[in-house]
Length: 409
Image 1: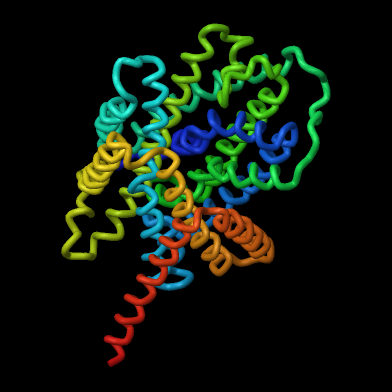
Image 2: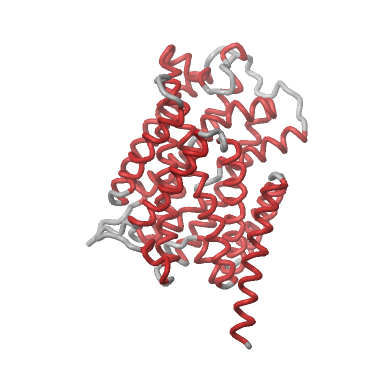
């Protein structure tokens, strides 16, 4: 019998990717934006994240499928919604994972400046693909080890920094609603990852107990690390801040090793994120294409249920993205702008499906609140990104209506 994931290994697939590059980049940026009220913003977004995680955990247990959100969207709203959800998720992963891998490449470049950072991206990509071609339990173990090391370093550094010299008062800056709202918008990056749990639902043993336990364990760790890092950023002296990095909170404990440790943490968390996203989307691609003759090759799996051709096909697209980055035609900011909006659209389909499929007033309240929050966040995207989303929605709707008219005529 094939060995499946228990709560600890499933947590290994969640903690590292959800912390991801966000735990390195966001705390100083949010503090710079909102001042001492950054910790309030973190608590609010982490609360939303927990509700978000529990909702998708409930959906993945009630309606298990490797298609994840696309499956629940189809059950709730039909095949058009399923295709749109899958399109947004797959579209986001055409370029989004490369923003994460390029972030890791930037930090490798800081340690070994002999080559341009994109060269390290070309080196990291085959390593990650090689790991993806192993079984899911091995990937979970690698992610769990990476996440554990990163969590230990961040927690120990943050705890020491909290007792470092600074005034006892937590709130010393004035509250500004506009800055606070913008900080919440930036913090959406801390939520990306929870919605992918459904794509692994068939790889889990006893999903009714394993998935909720893994979500609770992951939420506790992510919340503890995020809150302590955010508090530590506020308490270390301004003179210890090094640009928009968290080196200052590690310096009291790790001294001159703080810089290399930040680079190491960023690299391993980014690799964990890439593995989770790629593992999730390639399972979706394999499930969506198995009944379509002209692209059924993408559904091929080996004896260990690994979607080999989907992994190799998507990695070829990522090589093309790296080439565009090397030619300065793309950068991390542009990649994130598009990927973030697409991830948001996919999540909205899942939340809306949860509103329709799950019984009870509590889920109605949670889904309504989450959908309102996410639509507001999506409204802050660039106009050209919103234009792309509108074009996709219109194109799929027209194709669907044309097919229906052909069937009825």
